[in-house]
Figure 1 (cartoon, one colour):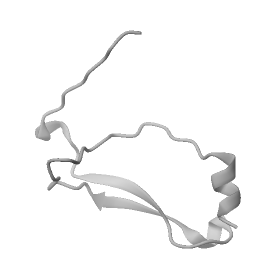
Figure 2 (cartoon, rainbow, N blue to C red; figure 1 turned 45 degrees about the vertical axis):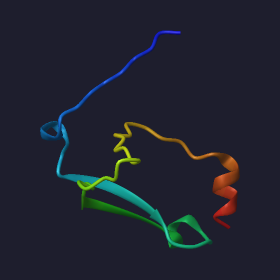
Figure 3 (cartoon, one colour; figure 1 turned 120 degrees about the vertical axis):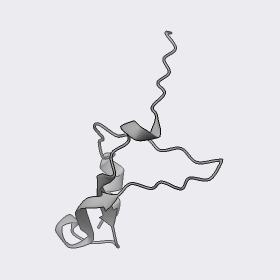
Figure 4 (tube, one colour; figure 1 turned 90 degrees about the vertical axis):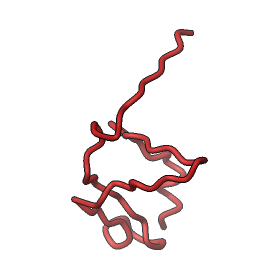
Length: 67
């Protein structure tokens, strides 16, 4: 296995992000919201990291749990 590391300076981090939020159980259209232009967290504690997500998937059982 090849080990890979990437370091990014604070100057390379955008100021805004898109955020998805599930605010309950039910039909996805009723409980999922997508917010554009949400401020990226800047003040992280020593045990937190900021990760840029390029793609994500939903586990089928998680999708079922929405209902």
